[in-house]
Length: 389
Image (cartoon, rainbow, N blue to C red):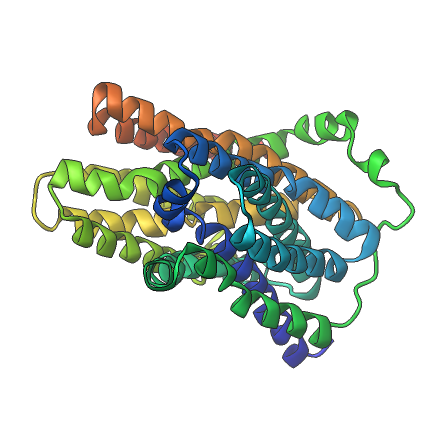
């Protein structure tokens, strides 16, 4: 495969990840409109959104399995097509019960893309860190532009059209991916889905010390990512007294920094090593939290910037996983570990929320910093004692 065609595939996979992230992000800014129309409580819409993100995490494992058995292209197209259909159905649903089910199905279809696309790309490119970083760029870029645009459409034309409007992006990407990417051969076509998805495979993989060590680091990275994404805007309002507009602007800066970091951190890890880059990301988070908790006027700006780059840790951990997996089972194994660390990491939101409400922001964000320090210490011990984890 020539480099020109490979670059087309990389752009299309990044666009596909942007689409799946945009479809999920489009729902949250529209919740006030949904609450008013269906006359439901905040807790119910919260359960629907939680179900969407949980479904996304749970389908990481099937994504890798299906990619190995049927070829990654078919799985990515299934993800994009499902996102298109569910976005339309969400916008047309007449009752909240169907909206609830639609959110879960939307998350499930969206989750099928990442593991299949990542394993597909790592078979086409040599520099895993750089490629995974570029692919991951789709998520923070969606976070930067989608909430603002969707909110504008929702205010001007209604929430239903706002949800459906995401098809204007997802459908063209589906068509381009179908027409421009050639068929992908299955790497494990003889194994059935039920044989691949079983407890023995899960326990055997997690028992491998290098994999379990990497899962631990990934859980910490996903934990503080979820905590920051969920509560950074309200923290800026309550702790620093920012207006909602100023808080939103800094939150956009957070996604911008994460987007820039996603295309650079992977290259840094290729050059200087995964563990040093991971430790650097953890250090950025620790320093960023310390800065953002200080009362100085420029502290939020500097702190948010540091935190944004620190969130790119998970990109490097993914290359750490892939380097320790066999080619034939890479899709299944990568999807499995993503499901594990994303489910555990999702507890970051509720943990930070409970601690902030009970003990204040210093304790809540201090826990995130403490977890990062512990992870840095574990990496240092691994390298110092040459444990090979």
